[in-house]
Amino acid sequence: MQTLTDLAKAQGVSTQTAYNWVDRYEGHHGKGSFTSQGSKHPSDQRKVVYSDDAIADLLQFNGITLPTAEPTVTVEVGNHCTSLAVPIIEGEFSLEQFRDSESLVFDDPLSVATQFLSVADQLIAAMDTDATQREQRLKLTRQAREQVCTKAQELQLESRLYRERARVVDTAQTTETDALQQALATLQGLGKSTAPGQG
Image (cartoon, rainbow, N blue to C red; front, side, top):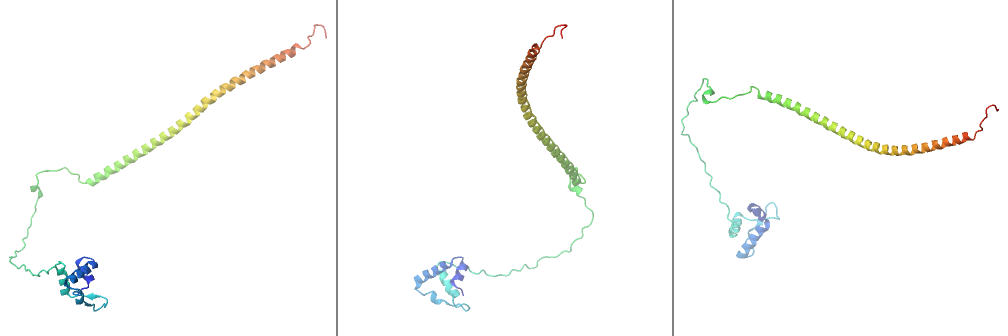
C-alpha cells in the first residue's frame, strides 16, 4: 500500500508528477477511475493509500515498467580437491646466486646525511650573518657619506661667506685704523714745540 507521495519518492519524481499520472489515467478511463480505488491510511486518516495492483496499473498506463525481482539462487562450490600435507622446507639460502652485480654502500647513510646537514646549516648561518654585517656596514657607510657630504657643502658655503665677511671687516678695520692714525698725527702737530734753553 502506497500514497502518491510514497510513489513519487520511489520513482524519483516530484509529487506533482505523480498527480499528473493520475490525471492522465482518469482522462482516459474516466474521472475517479483511479482515486476511487484509494482507502484511508490505517494510522493517518488524512492520507489516502492505494493497493500495489492499482499502483502497478497506474505506472503501466503511464509507460513506466516496474523492475522485476531477480530470482534468488544458491550456489555450492562443492569439494573436489585432495588435501596434501604442508611440506617442511629447511636449510640455508643465499641471495648471491640471484645477483650478478655489486654496489657501494654506506653502513649508516643517515649519519652521513646528518653530518652534511649540520655543516650545511652552519655554513648557511655564517653566510647569513656575514651578509647581514655587510649590509649593516653599507648602511652606516651610506649614512656617514650623506652626513659628510651635507656638512662639506655647508662648510664650502660658510667658507665663502667667511671670506667675504673677513674682507669687509679687514677693509673697514684698515680704514678706521688709518683714520685714527691721521687723527693722532693732527693732534701731535698741534702741540707747542719747546726751544732749547726756554722753560
